[in-house]
Image (tube, rainbow, N blue to C red):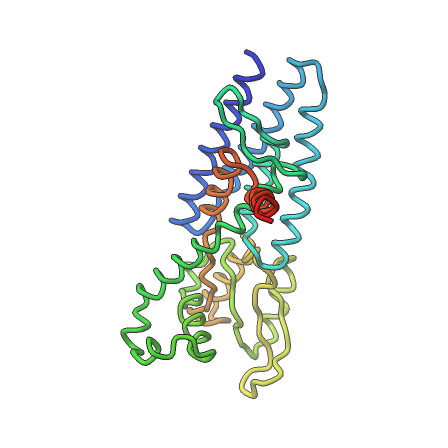
Length: 289
């Protein structure tokens, strides 16, 4: 098997896994770990094979470096609530499989390369492409929740700050049963007075943070997810046990997270066949002036 065939297999497998991740994210609002870890393992193995065949360590070395750097950067952006933990793992897996730029001359494809690694182009393209996805997502939620049906006046005052806040809060948050909680869901402020809840949540090194209330005379404390990673498996189990013991109520408010994997798939596709959108813009901008 020559190097060209392995390159092609890497591209096809990465595209297929990204398609599956997008489907899962839209349907289940989660990207399964088994999917991203499998793609990451494939990336390490396939690039190790490339190094063995070519007698050049650069393939597996580039794969490992790209994996570490991409994971570090996307993890920091995850801390800023830009996307979920599954998206970080998907970006990392893609970077592991395809660590460097693509000039796919055997397919007569010559994408616009960037000065930074291929995985960075995928991240940048995904962020740029995510804006129309986000708009469609919000419109779908607005229609589904019938916000304008209940509040016709918002159609007239849609660009009013108060109206926009109402639309966002009404579409991006929902109440669910504690028994329906799943790993990765982002919990909004949950107010309580029982100090036992602080003790129980403190036993878990998770993502739920407990805080004292400042502007609520009825409740002393509240807990919420601290970042976009959402609930851990242990936290889901603990909340369900606490609900079964009547320590917390049956309903809890969560954020409706934006499924970012379709944007990653689109960003990957654009990067493979066309190149880095930012570099294309810069190139065309300089040509214009």
